[in-house]
Length: 217
Image 1 (cartoon, one colour):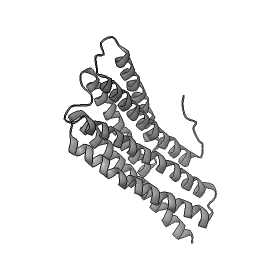
Image 2 (cartoon, helix red, strand yellow; image 1 turned 90 degrees about the horizontal axis):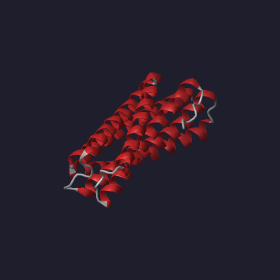
Image 3 (cartoon, one colour; image 1 turned 120 degrees about the vertical axis):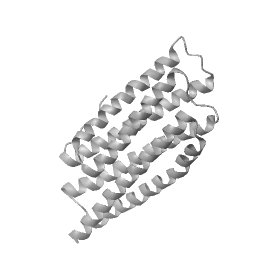
Image 4 (tube, one colour; image 1 turned 60 degrees about the horizontal axis):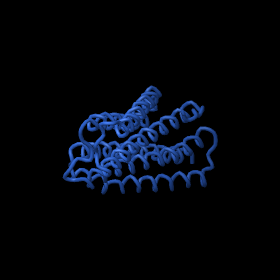
């Protein structure tokens, strides 16, 4: 029975890593679609989000069965509970990548962001891609140094998010109402993407160390 349980736990870990790889692909494509007005990439992100959702449903069902049938305790229980929370964060990260792609698709053939803010969103996308890649690395290696790097990227996304507000409220902003809404929403999507990446990092810290770090202000 123990061997079967360990095999099931390994499958849960493999599924989380696969979800993370799909999220990584989604944010790369969504950012490229946003910055280059590539409608085909945007449509791919929207269509492929279903695969992330299906993985989350399957993984959550497996975790619930493990809780019901195996009644794990101590470290094993920590693994299962952490997997449930991490899968939820990964699914939300996939949704946020889809939202970015939908904005890009909705403004085609125009760019959703332009001018000075184009550079800001390029930086935001770079940081979000790093978060996604580091989450995948963290899930496969449990290297806590990677977890702390994710937190630093999330801090950068928070700062860049504030920069978008400063631009919108500045005297030089001349965008249309639609452009103002797009910038506001896109900034929020990227900022939340980083938050969910940090949530995964904190969950992995808890899984490895047994000490749960509270969310930072």
